[in-house]
Length: 177
Image (cartoon, rainbow, N blue to C red; front, side, top):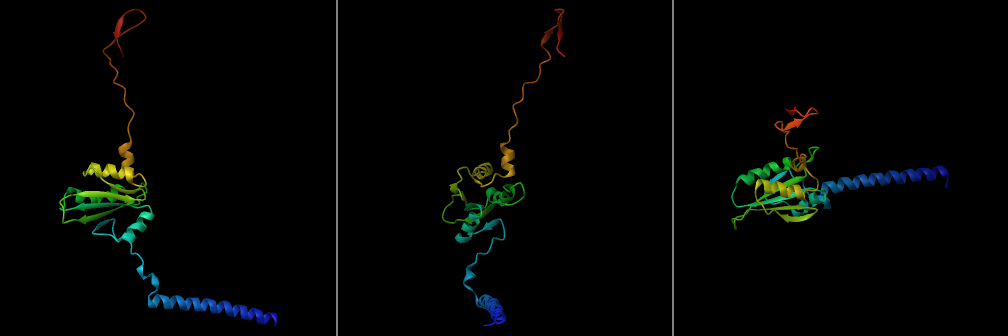
């Protein structure tokens, strides 16, 4: 075969491969390819109701933390949990906490659970401070509010007492300036 014929056939094969792959892509999209089970991302950082376990796992693998708040009646903590994703955001403003509020009918027990790559942890103290402290300890990245909360100023020395007399070189006593 001539060299020009070989080049022409090679070009034709490459064009056919690109053409058939494009046709296959279009057909698979129109007929519903096997990826129809793709997970739909959450619309909000606070969700009322259960979250698909596969979606939750995907978020956790991407270093998000879930706070699952189980309640029987809406109370001040229910309202407070809506603020937590913003309170626990990173210094650059990115959210790392997703709150799932789940209503339970069978018990009057309110509880909270923190879930991330570090595992599942129950929140012992169900108060605003207790939730905040538990999240500060369990989140993957320390939020600004937690850093400010842990910031401690050095102890200050007691104020200088001006009432003590000072003896100068001439043995006279005078108040300290």
